[in-house]
Amino acid sequence: MIEKIQQYLEEIENTTAKSKDELEQFRLRFISRKGVMSELFDSFKTIPNEQKKELGAKLNVLKQKAEAQFQSLIEQINDSNSKEESGSIDVTLPSFKSDGTIHPLTKTRNRIIQIFERQGFSVAEGPEIEDDFHNFTALNFPENHPAREMQDTYFITKNPDTLLRTHTSNVQIRLMEHGTPPFRSIMPGRVYRNEAISARAHCFFNQVEGLYVDKAVSFKDLKQTLYHFSKEMFGKDTQIRFRPSYFPFTEPSAEIDISCFICKGDGCKICKHTGWVEIGGSGMVDPNVLEACGIDSKEYSGFAFGMGIERITMLKYRIGDLRLFSENDLRFLKQF
Ligand code: DAH
Image: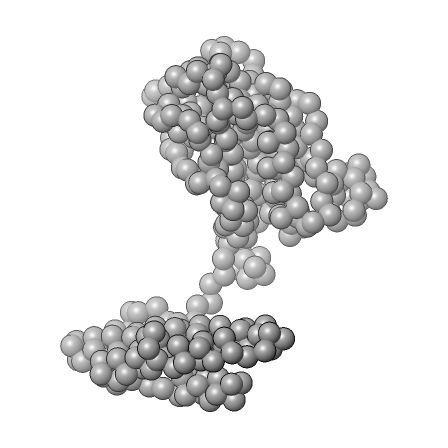
């Protein structure tokens, strides 16, 4: 059977298709249920159990190769058809091999999304140009309250009710005001603060917000969710620690620290010799926030968290300067 698989693999690789008929022949032979695959899967059933693992893996490779080759044959045929139609080659088409790389922030963002999606979170987005209600008031920042000073805000001069969002927590409100629980979403996006630009601060950066609201959600759900996230993101030995803190929109609130995965807790420059590094804030959604969105806080509870995507990326790749993310220096970007 192994020899047969090998033989088919070679045949697949060497197949070309100049016409739709040839493509159809390939499909019938290697993709369709009646082709060679079904014959192989039938004989697979009869082989001894101890050979099944190896052969099963080989069969899967064969199946994937066949499907990949089929796709590429379709593209070849479409390409040659369009060339025939236009009579010339379209030199503006992008080349197959690109010199571009994925931006490190995009990489981190994608990985964060993947980890939370596997825990049942969906992805939500909201506006960067926001009003006072969604950025502050509904999040339990009373008007003229000193907590607003925590976030240096860019207001639009003509209309001070309009501002650039200072955090992604606005999306919590946008999500909850128009729906009914349960909500289980993460909300990545760019935020803005009126800060002097330096290696450690920038006037724009990215956060990812998390929100889970349902009946009987408790702090232990928050702990378990972030515990799992930290292990997936930073390695399975990572420990997590919650430090009491204050945010207007959560009660109780906690800062999230992870054990320093660089020195493993012994103390180094990155963790300032404490063995711990902060990755964000969290807490139980304040009942006032639920009520501001028309949700009965006696029936529902929830947790929320917010983390900096730059911060996580800097820790993960040991990047020492925030400005590198937005300077588009190819020497930096090509390393990812
Ligand atoms: N919005 C906070 C900030 O930008 C981060 C944050 C803290 C978000 C705690 C949360 C939370 O959802 O529960 O500083």
